[in-house]
Length: 289
Ligand code: SF4
Image (cartoon, rainbow, N blue to C red; front, top):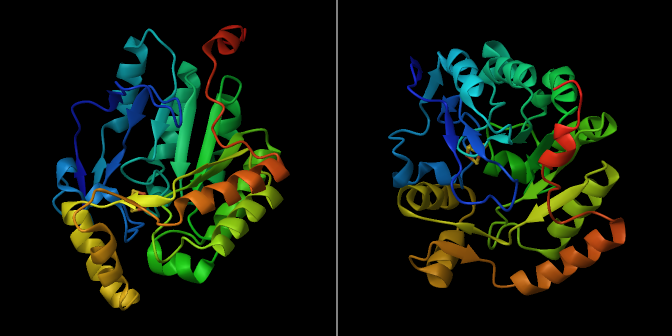
């Protein structure tokens, strides 16, 4: 089901310092996500999304964004892409993310987008404008194998498309890299997968890769994930149950070895393992703002 709703507030303030992306304000233009990744954490009860397959569109988002940005005294990084993908297929027709970026560009705020879609290239012009201050795009890529990607992230464009989009953004000077998370235990936690992701990221010009060798699992998210494991990877659910029980953080049992391999590959290719966040001092010097 796709439904329109009116939101009361659009931007939420990120209270804890965000060490991964340096985000200060979080923006969700939709609720629910058409990419339907089988491991998605947004199915967890704490987020109160009853049916994650339902997509709610915040029809007054652009109007709210204008009002809220006009009131912000600190021009700090706006993040999007944590609870849904801002470039899910519906975005192609609605252009809600595209219009929000235009508003952000007008107000001169920095931005960090996390996505699994090459549709972000549609907004390249606006991103270049925002990048006079700061724009970063992180592509979530957990496997370099398109076939495996189709099973794990059925509604998202394949990893190969994401790598191609990464190359284009890098060529246009956008700070672009890979969020390599989650790495699913017993499915993606092999050295070959990690090596292929880092090599492809290098070939396509990634500035950074942020890794996590494991996943989170809780309540409704776990129930859905286990159903999908039974359907797609017979026998793997039992491995999870034996290895992790009710644990929330499920780290791969070879995380240490994978981290060593990852670090050595990144240092060989000169890829950073963290995002270069927005630095307000340098942004403040730009005359156009
Ligand atoms: S793209 Fe992100 S938010 Fe959307 S289903 Fe996948 S993990 Fe969840």
